[in-house]
Length: 361
Image (cartoon, rainbow, N blue to C red; front, side):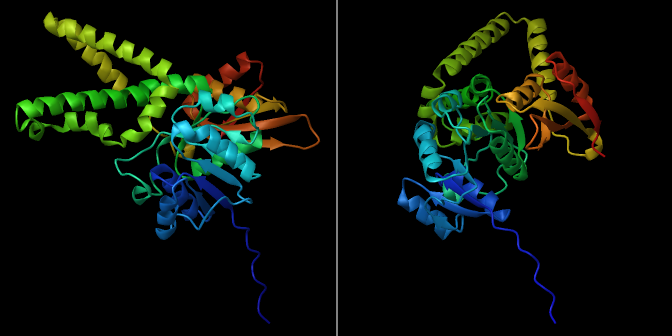
């Protein structure tokens, strides 16, 4: 008599709206982890190509999708999220580079704003790869009305791609990405245009481009089509940051023009120290601890704790919610670096929480 077959786990289902580079990469990452993925796109040729490449399993919304990723251009995200919420009963998230305007327009607890800080010089679904998010920061922007279960699902899923998940308020996200993403791209484009103009006057100039120039202008090779929407949606933060950059460049010009060696060395040294202290990932269990936070079962509790962690510059490596249906309280378990635990605990206690901690191992 043969042994009974093992009980098979149900196949997890997802939909990806927008089957370009990022959407296609999400679809590939999901399929590598056993999900069945449907693809939706305003361009039938793109979904046909995604199907041909094996990026998606089928075309069209999957009403049974547990999770839907909206990966359209920024200007189309709000309408696409609303369509996804109407076509599916599951959780919906997006990947747009601007968050406040989208989150303000979507009043649904099933929606979780998101933004993977990842990309490639490749274009379209042909350039999609499952490992594009490995080691990248993936920002989530939960608000008071976000369903904790929806947030936890999105967080666990994108963390399974190898991404480092960070939670911030939508407005704060837009201010930060103006500095670390939007203005750097515009700056690289401006520098590349300057070099190109000089190259027309002085043949062979670009052949002299050294590694530093290539590193600084690499992002200028990205697809330009996404940037008009981003600049329009995040105009105020981008313009403010550009003004600050212009002022910093003007100051640097004055230092160089005055041959002020002391100020120049000071400025370059400060920049070097800042660059060398950019945070690195920690992954060894011995370097991590659990911070356990009793919370009330009410809107805003989860987002309040996670955004506090970001404000304190404490990265959350994993998150879990332990909640009994009959109770009005729950337990939020955060995994953080051991050397940052006291900072987080102090911040939580200042907010009236009573956290405890214990080593992960």
